[in-house]
Length: 607
Picture 1 (cartoon, helix red, strand yellow):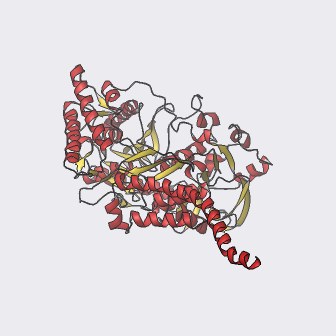
Picture 2 (picture 1 turned 180 degrees about the vertical axis):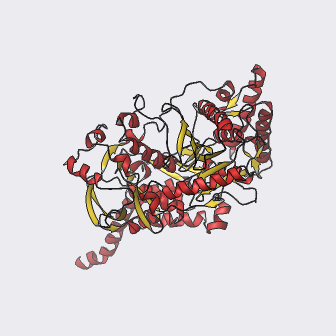
Picture 3 (picture 1 turned 30 degrees about the vertical axis):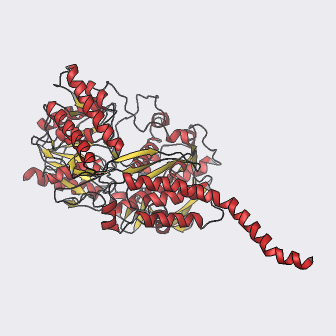
């Protein structure tokens, strides 16, 4: 009997282990099924696959197998672990449009902004936080309580723009940034990758799959005044998701969209922005507003304050003596200034191309500014730095105001599924319906871009091309022009004709890649600054039903091509005049940058 029991023991153990494994495997299998759904979407909806293979050696199947191995490689895998694996899978082609969001209620931030100069990292924009108080920050509902707020306020006051950031929680900042790049951006060590990682150091959001810390952390800095090295303990401000989900725009729509836009908006769904960049950049802008007269104006949709400046401003201080500027209640920040030679130069900051119902109002405001500058200025400095992109037709509307000659647009290849064919057919029918209703096209616009009968016909031809491509059995188009708009035509009323210096940087994405590419390819502007990010196509979001908290993911649906035949994706737009930020820029209010901009603007005037 004893011998029989011993003989049976391996079988019993085998059955126990199999049963135990069976209890674990279904969770992993469910994760694989979830991953399979996303992989299938990438197979049929991700346009730049071939380019990523050529440029990066990326392969969808290899990336999938790596993610699958990570899932099966852990016996204690959690939903959070899976979210990070899924994010790495989606980000493996190094495409800024491709991302995922998760159901989460946490986010954390610290009132610090960091920029990379050379191989070092420096604090920037610290003055924006000098006037804030803990009481103001803690006005935000459900914000975690902060112990000894006076101590932390004093620590913040000791920090100055241009102080070198050496370490965070005793980890060298270079190591911390490299860790973010490797874990969140798949080793994307481009200028854009480093800039995004620097933004992410002090912005953590569960909705992006990140761990959101609370409590305190330390930073070690080398002060610019005396070269002394000191360590400060600072708090994480830990807030619920409802703050994150507030509207990112302070603009209030003043008018209803045109009849044509109302009819077509259901089908003109192409989005040309990078949502991660929009999230990071607009959150940072809100943080800068914390020290303004009212924190409520920064974080509340319906709160207004007559002392609040609603214009979005870039990182640059005025470029010269201001002669005229837009009102603080206006949609855009613009001014006319005088340089050292007495020449008058216009300046406009465009923080985003992501306007919807307010697009026509913004275009009207921009038209009025440019009409004034056409009379008064000798040149224009147009600043689109830190622009996450947005609406293509709004972008075309801005371009139409900057030229008296047609501007060639960028063709793109679009990946197709039946939904795209359906939308094309519905868009074609909507234009037919609009024409049958007999509305006048004289002042019709689509998100600010003038849309007459010629544009109607271009869109209809584009729709027919989508349908015929599908009928030919193809799932990706030949290079075609989005909405059939091959040329961006000059605006019927306002056309700025003076020289343009366009300021760009590594945090310009999507439409903010396309915009400078079109101006450069057509010889309409001189580009100054850093190479843009290279998010060269449209993006579409897809909802996702998941046991593991996945809310949605996004994929790039097209790939645009420059005049020289190169794709915009990954390569971005190289400036005509390259400029790297200096340490003095951060320590002396961007003095070197302003000097260089004014020198180049003066050259344009004398040509």
